[in-house]
Length: 291
Image (cartoon, rainbow, N blue to C red; front, side):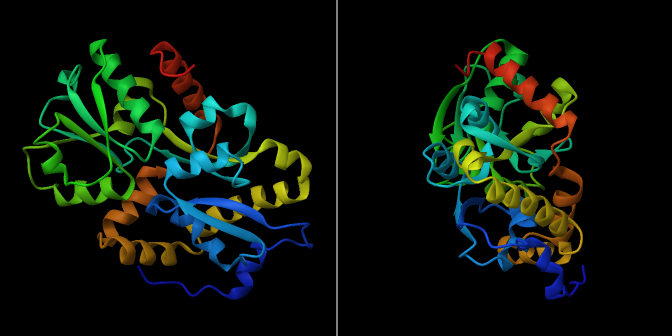
């Protein structure tokens, strides 16, 4: 894709129309899936928005412990601590059907994974709980889970475990690397959830600390509006820049990444997405995975 030159004037919409009382500590996922939101916001001075990059697991803790004021949070952690947060509308990290970056690799058929030993990524609570829901929905029983930290390849993990869950960039890269072999199954959890429910899988939402939002209404309004504007820029006027950056960071083909952003990921938070979150919560309760 030919990179479109963006006039600096285009980015002025991301700046506040008046001076704010203080800077905002904003969490940002360092995965490729958030590039459409993060890249346009690079023009915003750190004196205005102080960026804190990390994994979902790290940012979950930072939000819960009030170390940052706003940012993306795993859907599971949002549901568990929702009284602490204001949900930011019109933005999420979701899938349409397949997501491509939440993959369970195994030598076994999915319906045979009950009671099996599965290594799960430390970086996301939503996907791990979703895996348990999906296995239990098919077999009525759970798998045995062990946390992994991406110390080994998929093939190496499968010498010890019956399955291994990768999420984010490691999942994209591993699925691409293993695409031409037929000895290892690659199960897309979003696709399995869609088959089960007919709904998108919502892996993360953006929130703000409720007490901060209530005490700083102008800053809260600004960060809500800016996230939506950045998302829209990243998917339209700045999309060429996003795609080029994603290729440079990952080494993955442009065609794969274009499909990922345009066909697999969804950044909406529509009524359908909210229904999916409610359905996920009901399944968590049904499976005794949230209290």
